[in-house]
Length: 488
Image (spheres, rainbow, N blue to C red):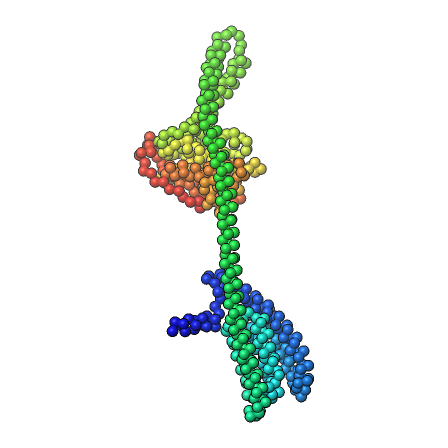
């Protein structure tokens, strides 16, 4: 029983002729390929049929001269119907019925040949060969399935039987009966051969498609892996360059700390020498105002150098987390950025409402501001008049720190990436892509959040929120509640 059931299932699968493949995409691809090939073959057969059917009128002249005109009319009608099939096969809305064309293109000429056999009144008519030709020619050209081959072969056989049964002939005539049986057996035999061949041909086509589909998938996977590998290699190279640059910056920071210390000592000696010089000049007789002016300029320059060194020393110092006035970080950041601001000619200003205090590191908040303002200056560029504003205020027991510029803005798809480590839109060597990722970690450590509001071509606004602190409070007095707000 299991063998019978297995044979039945195989016959059922052949009749249904489901498209192969283990996925909807594979099945759809097979149908698309089959449709393209089938429609191409339909047009070839239609062109041959429309040409050969009228040409075979010469057979009518010699075989059935009494019916020559009738058969000629039938042949013209048949050619017209074949050309109609060809025309319909070119229309887009008929493409979903492409399997039907394989049956029609064989059934139409077979029908007219059967009519001509019936009109001849001869069951042994040599025109049965035309019916065989419909089966054999189309069977070798088309990508038939078992179902379509079976339908056409049975239909052609039935047309011949109907044509012979409508005739008035003597079944006792052994010559005519022999010719009828001979023609019937040959039509059935050719139908069986063509149907069996269609099954084998369909199976071969399926195996070839599955092989090509597997190869296509393998090539797609290989291309995807190659792309991922190339992308990973590019990212590794970029990361390597950024890490080298970061290492350079770290080394430069260590070297700067040493330089600051080395400069500090001779600077103190210079200040002491200037103090003694001023004191000495005052005790000397005569007018030394011009010398005093020169000494004053020297003293002002050394004081400025000392101020810069103190800012650098304070910026590199870790410091303790305690409540401090946020304006101190703003002032320190602007002082550190003075060379960049003068070079870019971008107007940088700040406003502070009230006296907002937060708990944290003054230097780290300055680092955030330096990074944000520098990004704004670079985004604005030297060709356009730029403006950067820093605003600090108290709102609902929170301290708002806002950095806004009138630059070109940040595209929406980029806003989700700007805080990723090593992500940068600057040219290679102009930035590490670590500034904002470090900034957001500092903000997180200060129990704060940051959001981005930007409109392309108009502005970009970075809004930071920190818990409002009381004067004299420390990090131990405040419960940490770290979070990061995604850009919006």
